[in-house]
Figure 1 (tube, rainbow, N blue to C red):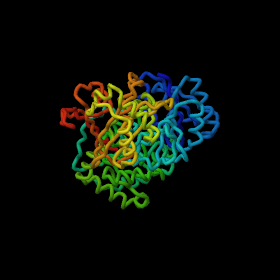
Figure 2 (cartoon, rainbow, N blue to C red):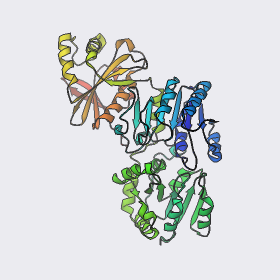
Figure 3 (cartoon, one colour):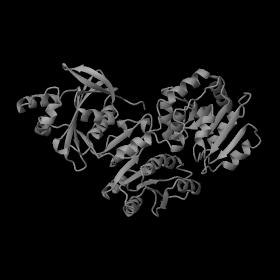
Figure 4 (spheres, rainbow, N blue to C red):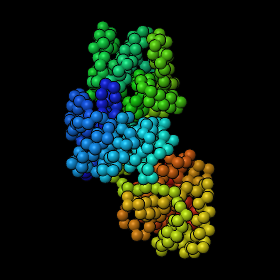
Length: 499
């Protein structure tokens, strides 16, 4: 494996969330045997100590963060390290930065939250947020692939040992975890403490986590030092254990939300920055967490009453916890690495000029032998069908091209009542390159992104073991034998994943 370059930053203004979520991706890359190099623009001693402890290399750039000079220097470092991929995460990296990296001949994974760039030149755009969809990305290159939603949530390894853990929901919640990000420049932590200290509940315990970049630590410390039921933790090294301990969390609306969902911690969520508003809105609209608005933050008495009601409501907390774990399974980093390591596949919509190429593919003897209609198809009959397919609103039809822009296969989805039926083939000249499962997975994900479809079915003729293995590897689940077009066929199904 070639080294992976991660270009991100942390500071009191930026926070630590961008780098913390990149650690999850870096850990997954390490697990494949690859080296990881973090390139930073700012000195962050506490965070850098953690990166070094994880075994990552750290380099600093001399250029202003987010500038063309930054992109040039990052590209030079990547080439010097022998890297093929660069991961970029931060709102100060825009379209020009992406283009510079791509023009340098490097592959680019761009981590995004709300479509802040004017144009997307990256090979892969990752938006792990629960509200992510293609409407954020009207301008992008034809080759750009999108990984959208909480199935790609960047969950660090330290959380994964809690997979499948069962959380008990007490009738009355008494253990509260407060975690408002790595910096919390507006010191909302103090406002939360002011409200919590007036909550009248016997046995209440509060653990307050502040990041190493928080400039208000001394002020917070002075506030809680005389409160016997409050514990202040700076730069916590055991967040999974703290979340497992907590009955309830009061959290910022950033990446910590996906960790809380993974752990099933019933949460009150505060948008501490403008870009967190959509996360809090989505979590509340889906009845996954309860949002806390600015009015409550400025009125401690009413905020305390809201907290008290939440602590007393077993039904609400129980329902929240059950829904939370359905959205984040912890496999996001590995799905992302799998996409990076897959042969680079680009999907485009079928065009009139593809007619004869497709006709030659479908008349290949092997294709006819595994088809439910094995007789050769005349060009005239094919043209009639093909022209109708181009205007059929219930047919989604892709042509797959490789990294050299050479067409190598097709995938069709016929839609009937939000259920798609997939048909796929690979150009005979490209067989043996292990493209089948990657093509099926890539096309199915793109199909789910572009349509409201919730299920895809695949019918595979008995004896076609190659296709069965390819669909299974692409995540389709076998349902047994079924009747299809007068023959017995294996039915495989893929469901749209939650998030």
